[in-house]
Length: 390
Image 1: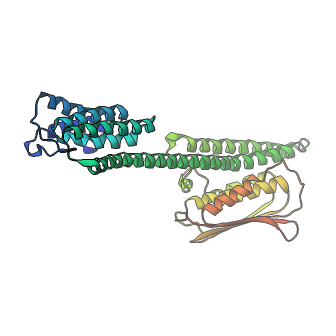
Image 2: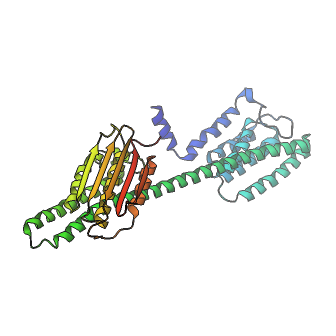
Image 3: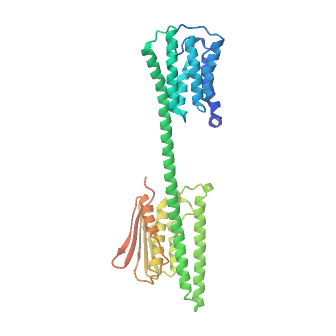
């Protein structure tokens, strides 16, 4: 109930929310215990309240309602009321409105800040002269001290303004960094999804051109192309679901792989079988059991194997490929090796996938390497901790 009332209050116009402070000060002026307890600049004799005093109190207090919307107007009206208050000797607690107006102007005034400071300072001089003429014994030291106190109120407001601007700049920087990270994440996901499936389809379609004389082998190949295309569409739909704001999944969260529709390490068998259908001889070995809650480690495992098999199809089609995945309680080890011999058919590539895998595994606190070993053998290795780093 309290939270709902607070929300309703925050939705009110800023003038409505600022008005109670001015009304509170105005009411305080009628409290007998606070009589002659207000600001006394110049120490002129106390004057009893009269009709003009009511107007002066209103002039000092009510403009506080626009202290954030029209800070310069608020400061000017309150300053006029304060000057009359001191010259007439009312000395009401409404004089407290002046430092409040200065603080608000320092914090919320957007334009012409320097002219306002100059005008306010210049207006203070005639007030001190008028008070001195009326018999004030304040002296230069007293007037300077009061001026410095008012300057401190303005300075506090200016500091609040600077702090607020710095916080806003930091929020913008964080938002821009988040957007950049999200774009990178989306590009990586699209690369992983599209490149593998499209590469398999291109390789299968290229092979189908040479099977027209063997219909019994052509039909399974075309079926494999159809199945690969359907899987590509399903993965793309899943990625679009992740990008849907109503889906409730944050791509920037490294644990977003816990989504039940995300590719898990258990899908590796289907991934290997798809690659085999594209004509790549793959030997697959998986030992151990994944940890109960590995989060995005399972997704990273899947993507490492997927990218390695995609590169095997593209750059060493027909060569023997070996996939080893070993699970333990603390990490998952992946090694995919491909012989250098093969048809050499390649639909083209940018190398973006391996770099993206290194970043993906690195975020999880793991290690990733890819390169040639023992002559023509190309080996992809990854050590992936089970769970995100804390």
